[in-house]
Length: 332
Length: 134
Image 1 (cartoon, rainbow over the protein chains, first blue to last red):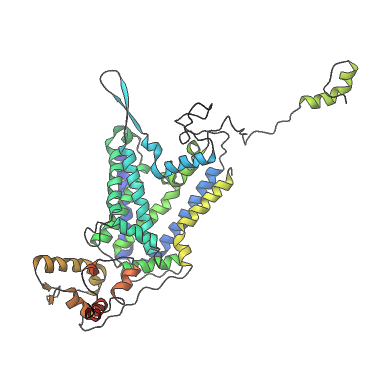
Image 2: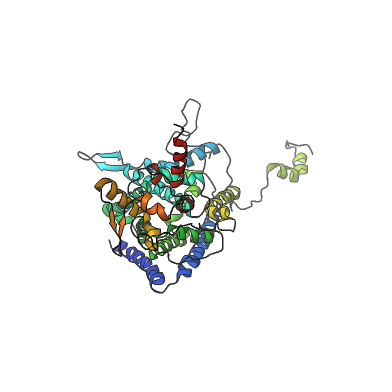
């Protein structure tokens, strides 16, 4: 647990920062306007720079990891999604990967059962909780658009209604709030309980987990327990989105805590493992078609080689070749 | 950069999706709602901050008290006795649903289910005017 201790302390310190900064010394403008704008700037600039940096790496040949029948002779059934050869097939594969985590679904676990025999069995729980966590996070992120748009688009309202459809408590509990907490708790417990994963886990693995738990907890506290004036929150959010920032008086400190943790997440994002958001689209083991032998791929860093083909050689020595009576391709 | 066309297209989509709030507001923030209250009482049931943030909790408790337990008496923080009832107590001052309730609820995009059972004052008038025709 020693490698989890430092990130835990760091997140606690991040929670305390706005409690002091806003709660004690009233730096509302700093935490309500400056920090969010700086965070947004770092997020966008960092994200784009990271992707461009990845884009400058040459990919000299196709290196997809495949797990299905390659396109071959017509009587072999080609596995189009597992071993794509065209752009459309790659898009299909990427779609399933990004939206349903297909490669995690294929996760296997080796076990020794009944003597010296190793058995590979499916383990779906990592896939299940990872999918739950990511989808809940996305829906929560999307739902927040209700605070940034006026009038609120119908699709945002629709998602909001579906999410709170059971009308448990007032205000109604969102299913995704529970799903996010359950998902991330399982992802955290996996790192603590499974010895191999625990051995591999670094502070940079624990930090985002604690940070997102912090964001979820402060967000839920703000909705269900220590309530804030949502009208003022939206006023601030809209003013930030319209580039005419104005901090309304009297939003609770819990809001600034939530906002600050989100800002830290945004600033940390481009420099961390969280960049798998962009990285999943950029990973050459997924996004390349397996057409190594169908299309000629030229290595982009090949040096320019001075060639001297037979035709040129013959041009050079044609007279001598003819004089010596040696047959030539072209008579001259 | 290799495959620059695809990467730039991806980045444009990324930037477009993540800047939706900026794009949709186009530099002008919609003003927050202004509420209309017919002030018959000097103060609301509890203090303003509590009412703004947590009126839904209070109304929920009131519903349980009145409908499930039959208690119609609420004693507020200052010790004042208040009759529990949405239409009888709340709507006395906040009589205009469209100008009071709906404005903030639309702004914050919440749709409470109060009116599944209760009549709004406007709805009541409409109901009364059509009654004769049945």
